[in-house]
Structures are given as structure tokens and as C-alpha cells.
Image (cartoon, rainbow, N blue to C red):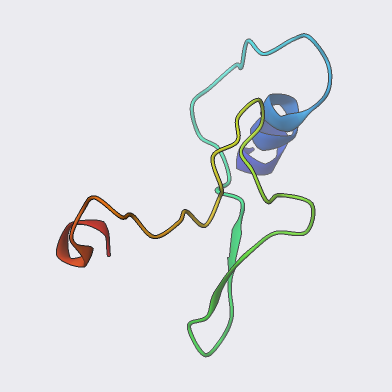
Length: 65
């Protein structure tokens, strides 16, 4: 269900009204704990917000990690 809702949300179609709120987050976690973005998912749809985020020059690391 979460994968289907993500496909609707991330799709190119004009329909963005989702039947629910459960979405798959577009990251993968390896057995060693490494976190990566899923292929083709550098940014969230309709934004320039990176899926994996970026280091902040304004906030201390204790707040963002």
C-alpha cells in the first residue's frame, strides 16, 4: 500500500489526491547501516529538497543528526 501511494505521489500525473497518508520513504538502508537514496530519487517530487538532506551552515550538528 505504501509503495502504491508513493507511486501516486511521485508520478507525473496531475492527480495528487492520495487515498491515504502512508508513503514509502525514498531511502534504502544497507545491512551495514549505510543510508542511500533510491535510484532516481535525489529530490522529493516538486521540490529541490534532497532526500538525504544537506549539511546546515546555520544549525549545529546536534540538532540535525
